[in-house]
Amino acid sequence: PDTPLILGLESSCDDTAAALVRGREVLSSVVLGQAELHSAFGGVVPEIAARAHAEKLDICVAAAIRQAGVTLRGVDAIAVTAGPGLIGGVLSGVMLAKGLAAGLDRPLIGVNHLAGHALTPRLTDDLPFPYLMLLVSGGHCQFLIVRGPHDFTRLGGTIDDAPGEAFDKTARLLGLPQPGGPSVQKAAETGDPTRFRLPRPLLDRPGCDMSFSGLKTAVLRQRDALIADQGGLHSRDVADLCAGFQDALRDVLVEKTRRALALYLDEAPASPGFAIAGGVAANTPLRAALTMLCAEQGVTFTAPPLALCTDNAAMIAYAGGALFAAGTKHDMTLSARPRWPL
Ligand code: KG4
Ligand code: ZN
Image 1 (cartoon, rainbow, N blue to C red):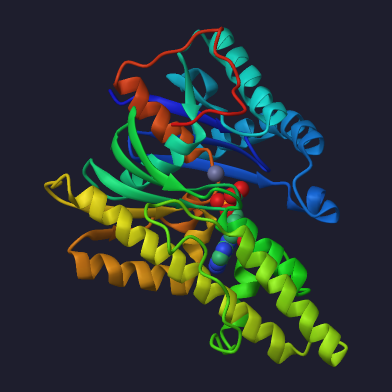
Image 2: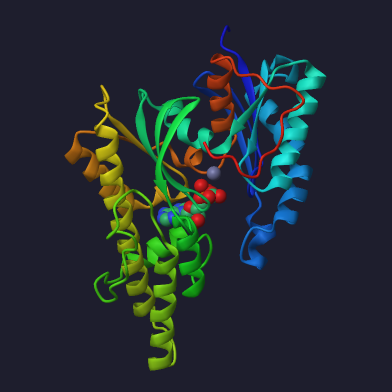
């Protein structure tokens, strides 16, 4: 009863979400995706996203309240993603949060979307600070040492595409359905990863930065060469290209994780832990390789359940609760930030 009940709102990309969280208990988590609104355009259209968030946010809040079996009056604080993200969507969330905070006379907490992802492993697991996190999704790719709700050290990240984006573009190039991650993974199961040797970008350079756009370009070149050669693509070619692509991406992520772990372990954390989050964390071969790497290094491997790995508002409510407990409180001057590095 002493632990505050937090309402969380998320609208920074193409998912509209609301959740009620008390401490580590998720009372409800409602996510309305917009995939079908954007599918015809081959990417998220900011204007369409913003409009949909504005239309759907209060429906999400009402559903989250109903499913949690609480009342709006019972909410102790309102946490909202204040960035980074598509500005129209972030604004929709921040405006609703301000309205609720003012109307209910409750504290308002602006949460960094990336901090939401980065703190999620602590919502479901007993993972002590500091831990190393790899955030890999359609929009993000970075290594963070997570030291506390306010305290992150970025060790590196992608300098161009995020891995999920590379999966999605590869799927599009090969005529596979969206989202690309699951369909490429499935096609790769029957493929020969050695037939096409795809590049492992930036592995020859020190540090934890990554690059994935060259990988997608390599898939495009191979595809075009096959089409020029044979007049089309056989399902065998698609499977082999997917397997080659997935192996290359895994190799890059595993090697860069090895380097990030070395930097992290240099600090001699008392109980070393590694966590993965974001939609690409669902990739089975990648997960298996990272699990093995962690076992080899004596580091505990944690992956939140998928529903909490992808965009959701429970992570925002949970992070908001952690920030609130640490004394963070915002007022009506809270602004929506399209860019907001941790
Ligand atoms: O975290 P997320 O839901 O959202 C955003 O980044 O906005 O991540 C979605 C991404 C998509 O690019 C999708 O293709 C990828 O995660 N993904 C996967 C898998 N499942 C989803 N990538 C690789 N393998 C998977 N099994
Ligand atoms: Zn996200």
